[in-house]
Length: 592
Image (cartoon, rainbow, N blue to C red; front, side):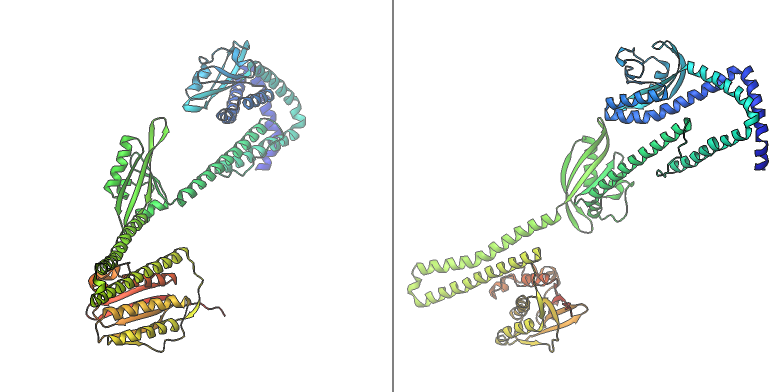
């Protein structure tokens, strides 16, 4: 069927040529209108494409390059180009000096373009004294005001083109009978194929594939169209890449911020939220697009948001948020203005200072505890010295008594300072990860601690036993520190349990950990004391602890020694049945 159609193509072309020839002579007005419409449409298309570059150059405020660009386009396209400012003044005209031209605000095509719609009109130009075809399109400028880009071609060129077309069709009618085959092939190859290729490529560009290049014919209007569309695709690709890059950079900074950030519109809809804010409010799912009031159920924060919207100025505040844990939040809020005084959204920045608050409380309590612990022996020392100074030193019995008080409280003060310094050193090493440990057999430190405590246990009629065999367990650590931790646990068990009780020290493996346990069958510890037992200066029975000479830092030292070895300290206890204190340490991995 296609071949048959191709064979009849010369006859079809001759018939069409004859008809066109007759129509030209009898319907020249119609041809003029059709061609005029074609010229107007083409002029409007070129004007629209030219407006993209004009918009960019106006935004850059580079008028010199804009004038050069328009001069080049005007010269190559034999087109008059005019750029009109929002107030009607002529910013540029390729045919006249812009400063000498009248205000164009009342021109019909300019009026329509200022309203936001492209327009094409044919009228007499008072400036050039001839009929022109004008195409005008709006070009968005700053503050929402439009410039107007107007192009024009002479109507005389249309008449010439129509006359030329008539001559060409007449000539074609004469030549078509002899060259119909060649002419048909030229039509197929020069017109149909490039247009089809451009159609396919344009469809791919419209689908988002901006890497496609439209085939560019060797000449003609289609070439200009192809070049313009290729240029448009490159500009779109560049702009999209820039926007994507800026968005990725913003998202990366937004996600890496330690402060929580929430953007909310005036209706309370969450526009954006970073991971830090989601963590503060324990939000597991993506809440963008949901209501702020429904997602974050905190009356203080909701009132804070409403206050920002109402007062329209930056506000700061602090509040406590109760979620899975108590958080102390410092909050700053401000409005986002997009256009003048119009508020488009609210930005809330949240700083979680819970850890700082805890450290402040801990520092305050620590200073108070240290002051209280030091004050007691200092008061006793001062009293004993004053008594001796007042004459008791001359009485041997009284002098011996007060000297014993001075000795005991000096030892207590010395032990307190020693333990504070030891604890401070352990904390420094833990925070700075200052560890250069070697592989240690755990049997050595544990056995040493038991041997050091045996005499004291025997003096209180307490049975102290080490469960053997210990085994060849190894950990990475410091033997002296491990011995000190074990010694503190055994010493506490001896100190706070009555005569006749039993203490068992054992070392066992549990998965990838080694457990050093000190168990007794003494009085035990009430459940409410267990969570705070390893805190500094925390005592179950303060009066009894001071009487027995404890500093209140022994278990805190045990905990920090365990943490320094990447382990932990634990306790289990039942009142009346005894307690089990455990140091959990990771097994050392020894390379062959």
